[in-house]
Length: 267
Image 1 (cartoon, rainbow, N blue to C red):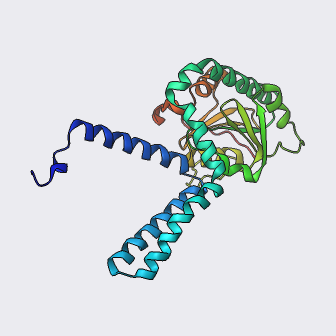
Image 2 (image 1 turned 45 degrees about the vertical axis):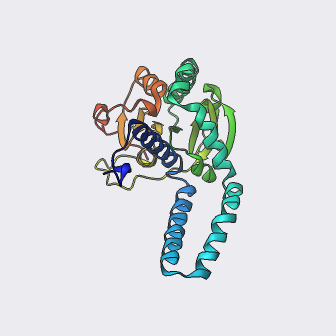
Image 3 (image 1 turned 30 degrees about the horizontal axis):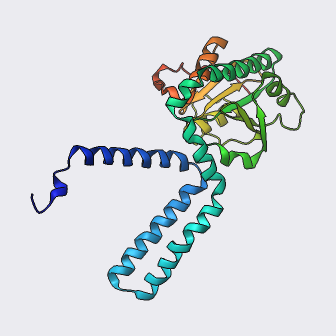
């Protein structure tokens, strides 16, 4: 064991391992569902190729891959500048920082709940996705990017029938509406309830791929539904909606607490 001291780690080693593991986990959360994930896989393949070239002593291939790694890092900084900026911004959105912004979260939840209540009473269909730790930036390409403070009046206006942005989803990040008229992925799993419409299937699809909270207002029945982590809670009241929005996707509530799917037809 004296020849292999790393087999007897001290408490500092254990702490460092846990810190690095946590940081890697956070990085993976940032890239899951984005184009950066494909880049990471590509870099991993290049790294494997570099190791193989070293073992086989392919000097030319080793030299070329070395150049790629040397100058490719600068290229990645330029190409992924938006993602890096968003990642740095999220450092201020940790659980500790959210504690100090609890009042703001409640205010945003109240604005969204008020908008959903108006849309439900008016019989206007709508779908609103509240971003969690997994970014929704990739879905902005299918709609119209916005930068507007969340307000009940604005959300209600967006979903006004025949308005340019009513046919699609509104995306919310923090206290900001970042997109409208966005197309969300439909669920890829079989749905037993054939009465589920496109909005509900899109809400389920997004909740399967991300940790977003997705609110749906049925155009046919005016019922309010919420999709989280691949489960759908339907026919909920406003107090329950405010609770889900205020806690957000960070509460990690058990999926078993969701209500069963109740038929709620929608075209």
